[in-house]
Image (tube, one colour):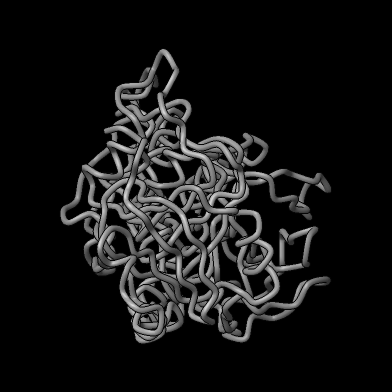
Length: 390
């Protein structure tokens, strides 16, 4: 599809701010929460991250689409983002792995986008005013009265209170075998992963380290988990407000009560925080991009991490404290953001359980945090040795 002579398009924010451009991807109307991401690369992985469900992604990097799209780099079965905003769209992709243009991919998946927008100006506005409801209107929809467009944007549901993990989760269980990812020999451990918006890179990381992974839908029960006799349980990333995840919180408490080793990332970190009795809250504009500095208390190292979250856990930094749900013992904030001191990880000191808010699977992004998968495996190995000794 040519990027020349495209239909007019407008990005409309809930406060009445308007940015004009041209249609990109499918022509039409889309609504969602406008958020920005600071990645210079990895736009395909960004678009296919289920954590962006019902959000309009604003790319701060000005030139998008130059490497095209391929089948291998998709992080989920579809693009779950509500819309896409770029400054300068590549007219022709140029990369040996490219199979089609990003424009064609957006159009084929029904994603309404806009190009020709000063995305850095949009980002500066969102940094001061906060992420907000927005809409992209292209073609005939862009010619409607502005007051009508603003009213439609404002009338959409808020991200606060949105329950979305069930919408992006797998519909049926499946297994990822270590042998499929280069592991030789018998699996080291069996892990059950609850898919709250799982990215494809996470099973690959675990399987390559010798883990047989059973991926279950977000609505699965504790009985579904124990029926597989796992050595550990994993809760994935995902979209929406963690305050709506009561079912997953109750499930995780059963996992912790059973003494099963636990590892969670992103949404899984927020569910873990709630299970321990902490609250969660919505960040003004969130953390999104593969360049977020985090302090790891365990190693004393600063790691550059890939992040995508608009909510966070409200827990105290510093010395360990008793979990508000006292049965789980002592808990500490194991990681925190060096930009704004937001909690980026939790660790129980009296039970085998930890979580991080960022994405150690690094698709796309740096590999600084990949050893967290090894930490999880070491935890399961130690727990298994302790159980055998008992």
